[in-house]
Length: 273
Image 1 (cartoon, rainbow, N blue to C red):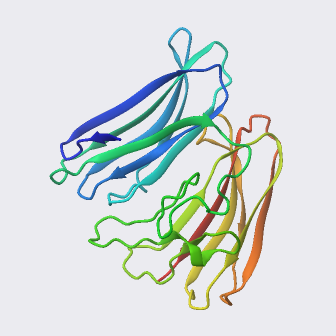
Image 2 (cartoon, one colour):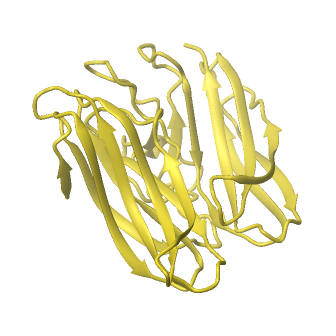
Image 3 (tube, one colour):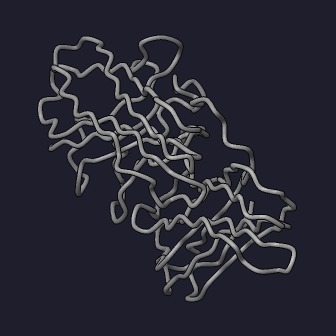
């Protein structure tokens, strides 16, 4: 993997130019800032250039806040699509700025990929991903750790005991007591065109998960200029009873904007200790 020596103050950038005539792509990978790193800004981006070398579009995902300096890998990414004529290449890049950090507090980067965005939700059953970990393949948005704790709590993980079907399920840890806040979400951009979409999920709330404050399913609507939204989110609030029983919930939304390129399903959960 790539290592950035972020125990020194400064900036870093790594990029690669890829020939393209335009399509819907995802640029993503895994990043780990070690404990003691002091990031000011970290971003992942795609820049689209025409044959004259002019920048015609940028898709940039700022990763601060939400990036945690702990010993675990975080899945980061951005999607975008460019319809400009005379396109020549897209530049994919990761960049950052850091203050002075603790000795040998590096930032590591690995397994970057640039692929067409799927028209189907991937890893919806959380089968790809190790037991007791938060590095869930194909999903983004997971907030597993909180910085500043010698033993930072993971508040969402894959577990075999959390399954309805298959081998794995995703669990939000209602028992944690050491986090500064209790909030986590998962999301995944899916390639889309105009129409109606349904995002559904099976949820089981255990008896002792008593302090749920908010849970919602969302559909977010984006054009090629992601993360700029085309229209307001479609949101359904859910309140699963804490009776240890599985229930299915769904959100249905429609977008007729011809500029639609991506729909992003989101599950957000918030609770108190």
